[in-house]
Length: 309
Image (cartoon, rainbow, N blue to C red; front, side, top):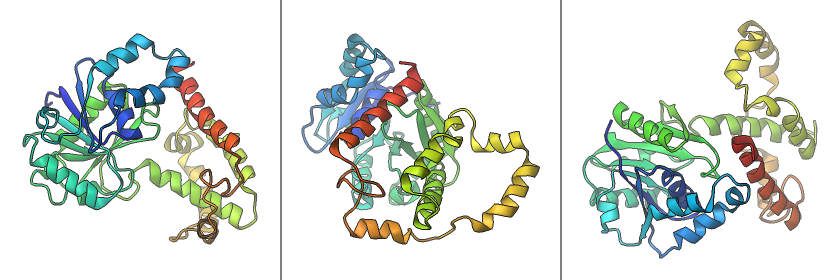
């Protein structure tokens, strides 16, 4: 495996800062962060990790140690860029911007530098299409919040080498992440394909008057949602038996939502400006206090599940 010591995070927004914090957990790594604009990375990381400090998951000393291994630059010709062994791009979700970013990086980094894109939806094959060394490029989809959710999807492009993919997997394991390998570059990769299949059915249930939005969420929270962290769908299918799974599917699949277009209800809400937390109304109505509570309780739940705090 290629030795990795110097890691560069390209893009110092919320996700970029969280990714930098994660890699700084390994004392063997020096983490550089690059952004076009001056950014107080330390202050941002302290804000993002406040709940971890408050819950006693990390100590002030541990946080200070991590921050000491992170350096920031807004000079793309900096040694932090030129000396990178592995780069993770976390810039705006725009194909043109991502391609331009990697073209600039390839002109400055070594030919053996591993390139990763943190895009949650865009094709690694398409992003890397114009690079000279496409075999060293993979997707690394960190889930938000990136410093809490363990999963990272390592997505092979149509040119990624097995060695590069495995190297990235090992690096991610070394900082406590749970990497999974997506063998084919398909829209949504692995987890988002399953998540949005569920969302499509949930929205269809509301649209067709079977249940309201709050009821749909309760049905998930207090049934299969409870066991999902312990029992995944494939293990569950084996548990009940592939024969029973077959019989259920033979009966129910023809009645499930299979539209290839977004729901008309979803389009209506979007067109009416009812876009959820940001406007106070989507499928349900939300006060600013409820929005703040939902966001805080999600992080608290994740910390409790992952760290028992």
